[in-house]
Amino acid sequence: MNSRRDFLQKITASALALPLLSSFKSENIGQPYDRAYEGPVLRVAIMGLGGYGTRVAEAMQTCKYAKLTGVISGTPSKIKDWQSKYGIPEKNCYNYENFDNIKNNPDIDAVYVITPNALHHSQVIRVAKAGKHAICEKPMSVNAREAQEMVDACKKANVKLLIGYRMHFEPKTLEIIRMRKSGEFGKILFFQGLSGFTIGDPNQWRLNKQLAGGGAMMDIGIYSINGSRYMVGEDPIWVTAQETKNNPQKFKEGVDETIQFQLGFPGGAVASCLSTYSMNSLDRFFLDGEKGYAELQPSTGYGPIKGRTHLGELTQPHTTHQTIQMDEMAGIILQGKQPVVPVDGEEGLKDMKIVDAIYQAVASGKKVDLKL
Ligand code: NAD
Image (cartoon, rainbow, N blue to C red):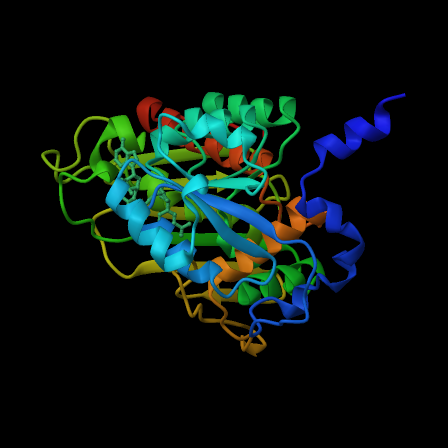
C-alpha cells in the first residue's frame, strides 16, 4: 500500500504545516505583519516583471499568507534588481526557455503569469505540466477554446488555476454582493458597466493583435463583462454588440477601439456596457433593482473604490487590492477556502465565452445566444 507515501510525495512542503492552518484568518489580511503567524505560506514565482508584475510584487510585501520566492523573466537585469529588492535566491530565478525546471524546485508552490494576454495559454499549460499551481492574469486567454485547454491542463495535472480577478475580494464590491444576496435591492432589473481609458503609445503590445488577442475588450471591457455577472448574480443568456472605430490607423484590424454591448440574464435583467480605449474617466458600475440601487465609481481601478447604495455611502476601508487577493488566493490554494465570487479557471472561461460572443455579435450584427 503506497497510498500514504504517494500522498506525502504529492503535497508540498508548505502544505505539511497544515495543523497550523487554524491561524489563517481573513480578518488578518491587510493588517500589519504578525510575527506570531507561523502557518503555511503560499510561495509564489512571478512570470513577467512588467508594470503589473511590479505592482503585485510590491503589494505582496505586506501579505501574511503569500510570499514572493521566485521570478521568471527574459531580462537578466530585471532579475538582478528583483533579487536584491526581494531577497530572491539565484536557484529560484528562471527565464522563458528553462522555467519548466521549476518542477524540481520545492520552494515554489505557484506561478503567477503576468505577461501579454496571448502568452497566457502556453505559459499556464507549461506551469501545470511542471506540477505547480497557476495564477493567471485577466484575460486568461484570447478565446474560449484556449481557456478550456488551460482549465483541462490544470485539472489533468491536479493543480489549481486561479484568475487575477482582484475585485472579487474588494470590500465595497463584496458589500454590494452581500446586499444583493440578502434581497436588499429586490429583483435585479438593470446593470450598467462603463470601462475605458485613452490608451497612449500606438506601438505597445496592447494594440498588437498577436499579443493582445484583441483591443479594449480584452484589456478593460472584460471588467464590465465580469462585473455584470457578480453584480447581477447570474450568467447572461444572450448578447448583442456594436463596434465604433474612429481611428483605424491606431486600432488596426482585430484590435477593437470601442464596443457597446448588451447582455440579457435569465431573471429578466439586462445590462448595457461600454468598452473603450478612446475615452477617459470611464470606470463606473450601476446596479438597479426593484427596491434600491448600488453605484461604484471608480468601480475597478486600483482604488480606493468609491460607492453608495440607496441606503447611503459605502464605508468599507480600502486595502491594497493585490495584497488581499494574494492572501485570499493562498487560502484557496493551501486550505481549499471558497471565495464569495469564484476566481477559478471556469470563472475565467465563462468571461472568454462572452468575449467570443461579443466579437461574433459585432461581426454578424445579430443577437448571440450564450450557454455558460
Ligand atoms: P507590461 O507590458 O507592463 O508587462 C508585460 C511583461 O511581459 C514585461 O515585463 C515584458 O517584458 C514581458 N514579456 C514577456 N514576453 C513578452 C513578449 N513576447 N512581448 C512583450 N512582453 C513580453 O504589461 P502589464 O500591464 O504588466 O500586463 C501584463 C498582464 O497583466 C496582461 O495580461 C494584463 O491584462 C494584466 N494586467 C492586469 C491588471 C489587473 O488589475 N488585474 C492590471 C494591469 C495588467
